[in-house]
Structures are given as C-alpha cells and as structure tokens.
Image (cartoon, rainbow, N blue to C red):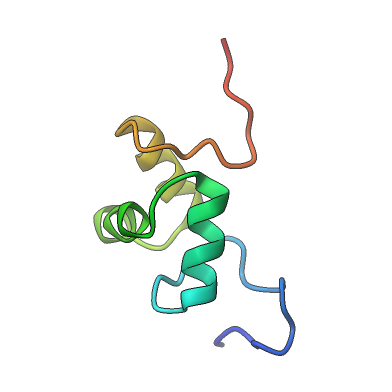
Length: 71
C-alpha cells in the first residue's frame, strides 16, 4: 500500500522510497547523505532502511542516522 501523503510522518519507516521526493529529502537529511548518495545506496542494497544505513556506514557515506557511533 502506498504512503498516504495526507498523514505526514507516517511513512513506512523500514522502507525508503526514493521515487517520493519528500521521503528522499527526509531520509537524506536523517542519514546525513546527499539525495544521490541515498539513491545509489538503495540501488545497491534495496529499499530496506537498515540495509541502506549499514551500506552507507560501510562505504563511508554517512549513515549515522538514529544510532550513535560506538568507540
């Protein structure tokens, strides 16, 4: 089922839809990457948010998101 644009902030937070500009902007900001870096990550690993976050971390492209780094 597609996101209901009338219910802002209620997207499926486990999936990243790079075809929806508002999601692309939101996820890019949240993950600390450019829109193009986010699109590239989704092309590489699919739209699962956790996989995208992990991919961005491993490639040095940001991906800090909600979780603090350890160290």
